Length: 376
Image (cartoon, rainbow, N blue to C red; front, side, top):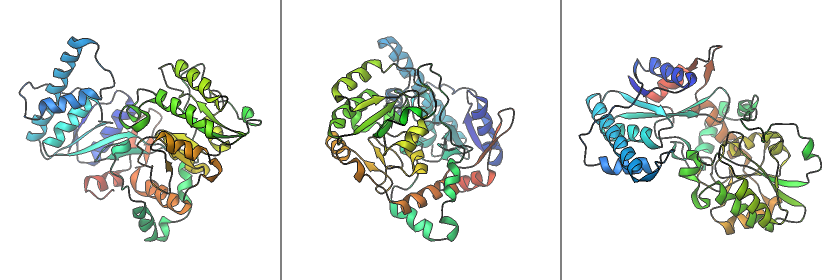
């Protein structure tokens, strides 16, 4: 049995219902309940969850109110799952604010959890008992994937590339960011491509590491781009869903870089990936999707695919400068990438189907493996 928080969108809600059905049933919670009887861990759990909430309260009164709301939600979740310790807690993302408190309450009650998220590939989803993004349960040892791939001929080859067969750039919600053709790239010269991320997304707020933020990354890029060889530049594109203006940090970065940064908000994202000499990202899914184009990737933050041989990690400004000074030396291990992507295809990302009404169903065999602890 699964107890899950309702999704705000039909696709999320029906995905949860599909997983619960395969698991033997479930309870849909429209909201998290409240309990004001605390536990020894309540204050610490609420403080941690509030610190990473996407919407930070304004002023001391708002902060006090939100803290006690989250604390009461943690108390309720822990008390509920203590009473229903045969159930599995599931919610979307589960890393920030109230949803983190819900999942922390379940963990402290000793029950299993499933974190759900979008997958970076069409018709797939993320269902992970450990977390999502940089907190997921995927092994971080490159040798694991090579050994796994060597165990069967079915785990070798290029079938994983079919994951990217229907990959399309995200439709833009902004008039100043588009997905046009590749005409602007014909005379672009040599470049590394940097797709910017949504500034307040949990990928940035939790896992941006030393750059700290999207503006922090722009500042680092502006300084490091000066080390590029003659004829090279870094091409930047803003995220098509970002609501936060980056006009000021972009202008500052352009002024610092002395012509080595170019903003191209109109050319299709994957056309820029394909034409580039490599991709630079904090931890965007575009970095992973660049594997389909056989492009080297530089990560600046915490990413589950930031493994030696898959990408090259720049963990400081000096490391980024060093990598950018030799862009043609950037590389990757094709065998490791093949094994890693095959594992994501065959094991990690369950298949989904979406009908004409937007109802999502998840591969029941994949769900059964998860429930039985055989998936990762």
